[in-house]
Image (cartoon, rainbow, N blue to C red):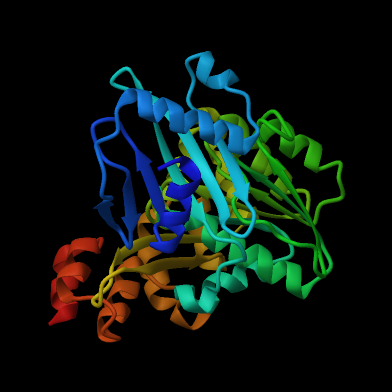
Length: 351
């Protein structure tokens, strides 16, 4: 099979990812499970041919690859879909992992994204963070939030993505999408530039280091709504991750700054559904006076109790979300126990 045939087959199989790795046949990830495709194991030479075809489809130069670097980019095939490609080397041969992104925007109702999460897009300013490990759907949640803004108010939305996944057409808002390394050198540079482009909403693909986090917090202070992601689990861990990138002598000032600008943190994970496939669980923390005080006073261990008591405000702990999914019959008891944060407490709550 050539690369186009592989991509077509993956879309038909509703695969989320495609693995091209030497020593294995073409492998799809469907509903959280690997499915090896019929055919011979891929050899280094055959993968090299497929990688060449990927670069041709993407109209990309192999500059990064020839410098010994990994390469990230996206390709679009009309009437088929968009694909996010990562090309790298392993065991001395080329390899590629391709994320399948279908045309059109995701449906938050179908994906089970609660209103408490989507409503964070209604903030006019401040910082909203979507967190979780890789592959848990953070980009999809952000796409739904941007779509909500685009359909509901006239704003200039600037996204900075690496690479661009979902394409947003201009609706009530103007949506400007910039791809890192193609449209702009990097996140900090793009952020500094964005503040001169009359933004109302900024989507920052990832807050990954001191420069990006510092620039993002500064941008959020200017009166725009800034949406971003972190590879963290839980609200307290997310706040600690932000604080830890700053020198110790700056952390108290950063706590005060963060307490003022933070509007909410969503942590999500995908867990096996009772009927096969995957279902999303969401922890939701919204900024209240109590939460702001806890950030300022370094009492982050108390955030969980605030989320448990804040159901009326749309807040929910991860364990609370899992328990609700179990009660609705969407996941099994074993899944709830394997995915929970506090095992002993979950055992009691499950009865």
